[in-house]
Image (cartoon, rainbow over all chains, first blue to last red; front, side, top):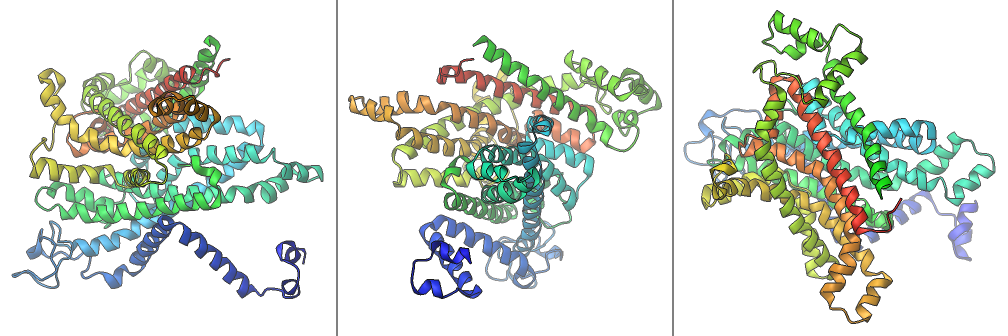
Amino acid sequence: MAQDVRTRPAGRALLHRRTRLERYQDRAREAWRVLRKNPTMLLGLAIVIVMVLVALLAGVLATHDPRHLVPLDRLASPSLSVEEGSKGTAHLFGSDELGRDVFSRTLFGSRSSLQVGILVALGTILLGTTFGLISGYQRALDFVVMRIADGLMAIPSFLLAIALMTLLGPSLRNVVIALVISSVPGTTRFVRSIVLSLREREFVLAARAIGSGPIRLLVYHIFPNTIPPVLVLGSFITAGAILSEAGLSFLGAGLPPDVPSWGNMMGQGRTFNSIAPWMLFFPGLFLSLTVLGANLLGDGLRDTLDPRLRRLQ
Amino acid sequence: MKEYVAQRVLAMLPVLLIVAVFTFSLVHIVPGDPAIILAGDSGTPEAVANIRERMGLDKPIYQQFYVWLTNALQGDLGISPASRVPVADQIMRRLEPTLSIGVFALLLSILMAVPLGVLAAWKQNTWVDRLSMVFAVLAFSIPVFWLEYNMIYLFAVNLEWFPALGYKPISEGIGQWLRHITLPAIAVGIISAALPARVTRSTMLEILKEDYVRTARAKGLIERAVLLRHALKNAMVPILTMFGLSLAAMIGGLVISEQVFAIPGMGRLIVDAVATRDYPLIQGTLLLIAVSYVVINLLIDLTYLYFDPRIRY
């Protein structure tokens, strides 16, 4: 009840309680207003949506079976028409050394990249926020958690991921684990710094003054305020994880070689770069676009949610 | 000032200790007898026994760590199981190419990031600003190896300005050396310039609003002096910090680039070590890189004394 009175001007609005649908409409209108003011964010969002659709609809959009070998069609250059002597439909992005269609493989490749990106972001945020909250609020644990974070952060994260992949062996699950471990320390440190500044703010002091215990303070007062910056960080982590997965797979320390991922396709295409550059070019283009989309979205979210977060690169 | 330096050096020690613990545990996390793992796939029973004795693997784990650490501090990082070559010797032989490309790339990234960031902030909201930031977000979104293969295709395969692969040591002539390291250095430089350029811009934007900048302009200083001596010098602390942090990304980029250009440096050493599961080599290279990363960031911290004389302890 109190909520309705809070911001509404006097008069008719006071009498009219808004329905749930109307409140959603309000929110959608607000979101659209923000997006229209920020065209690069809109572009980022559009790219991300298109890539998610590509991943979901890869089976429908693909012109070929991504794993189907056509020895006659080896290293066919990209074309819109069917070449003489080859069978089936045209290879829009050319074909690889085993005669597989690069266009179809690129579409299916979006699946592993997006999976890795999203899972790593979720895992990192879950662990990083937990450790960050504990570390920022519990002085005794802070020292231990931060020294471990310092130690892990001293090893460049890509190298740490390579080393972990040696231990774990190539698979999607292990790539996610390795990338989460290498990005949790930074996230922990980031969330901790937010908690440290929040815990001295008036509303937290007020909550403590009326007798809230530490758990209640953390869960109800501090945690909700870490969500916007962590959301921004999440889109950058997604972008970084997609890049790192490609790097790992490219080096042969990522996904198993039979998975049609962008990193694997580029790793396999490098041998043929001088005669069939399309094998490497198109998966890389899609990957770069996806990462660009996530980064632009992150930039836009940062500017919208909190202009003070400009330092969060 | 002496206390400040001492304090920073002391703060570094626990971090290095944790790095050492992590690197050491790498072998012990893998299931199985560490002596057999360290001896490698081709390890003879004598080799296994030799390692067990040399590293004291029958002793408690903290004693093993002590032995390993004191050996490492004396420059003995163990022996590769397959080649029987001491790890330290292998690293020494691979340092030159990596350092050549790394230093060249760092110079290029400073030369790109700082002027771009300053210009973008000075001409805020003009096309110069937008173009610089488009460059920064693109450089931040593309995989370094994709950039490199496109550069190879364009500048090495088609235009034949640079060799596509390989490395010539500086002792065989500076011209050849430069020609071989230019493409990888430009690519790594571009990738590592992205974040520092953004930080330079955002820090400069903040500083250009300061009173002392207005004072400098009011007293009639030429714009160049205002920008460089008054604004940029004060922006150097966050900019240098960012360069220090982006060294981690640069090291990851170097590992991949050496693979792309077939350059026999540290990166290739690591990737080969991972492929052959040469644990002493993985441990040695990780330890060395982490230590250098921490030490370089310490040195950057010490330059703050020059750029911000308020830092006194």
